[in-house]
Image (cartoon, rainbow, N blue to C red; front, side, top):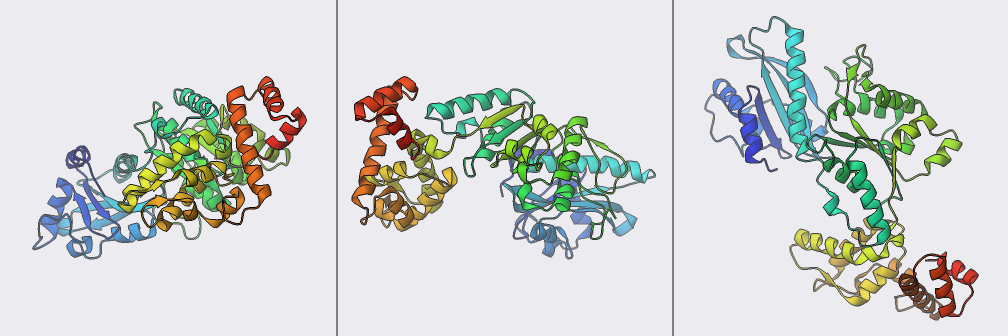
Length: 450
């Protein structure tokens, strides 16, 4: 885990003790306040502490447990020598939803006569620290990351850039694997909230009760099994930034009402809580499903839909943006070359096969196919035989391809080429049909398979 010089200087300027570890439990960083604390409490401390296992320096430390479980531990009181009282909050550090380390924030409460007021102040400070850490590991994609060779994707990218200049809600509608989170991160980074946090959650991964507690948090004792000290919700964690709700269609209907109120009022109430908390969050949602159909079936609230869909951005599936496939392929192969530490390229035959395939899994499937093929290529050059059998069969590029399959592929490529030359409007289609010697109706039937 890398910590910039700017972040180190920021943490060193704080009076709270800051300690960061990696997934192995080794200390990555300890600021001046934390080092001062260790020198008083740990006899025979070996310095520098960075690189040492935390449990060797502080036996019984609970931060490694937080890293292992991915769950924060809050409001842990401690009393050390000379009756010095302090409280510790411990959080996992996330990157793209994966735990990459942990951070503990130690607040020393000297002469804290107003305990509650002091607790509220340090809790606010802890959230600020957590925001700084997770910001560096959250939204890394920008509009420069979006490949837009085809005209339809250029139009979508332009619409997304316009949405980024506003604070309006955005609904990303597309098939699975088209890169909805990439667009969400790009919109966030190009917005006025780009310096704040980007928090994401997939609504399909949680049942109703769990999703509610994830979004809104809970207070201590809210339900059986609730953690001591409660838990901060993602709305509060994203305060000032962006909250991305993926697969919003899968949110339970009853929970949708609470989400609607939070968006309308800018307030949330944690489970079991009495007081409301003000939140300032930009909402971006995504759905693979047809939300209008869900509304008709009574599975999605129409009023919530209107709140979420100020900007509706429909990302084309890969089969509708075939001009982008070569550029996407080159980018993915460049990433794979860095990952595998060897040059990975692709020959013309394999490229033609990729261009002919239907890509039901979209860009995600393209990435998986190229990674598989990279492992299958002995000399680092992906050829047709390196590709998965399923793709070879469907594109007719395999050795067992029938004459009918080969004719169909040739026909499909000819239609695409002529439509690109003549235009995809009615006049262009009429000219294409005339050049092919078929009726316009026949052309439309063939276009269904393209």
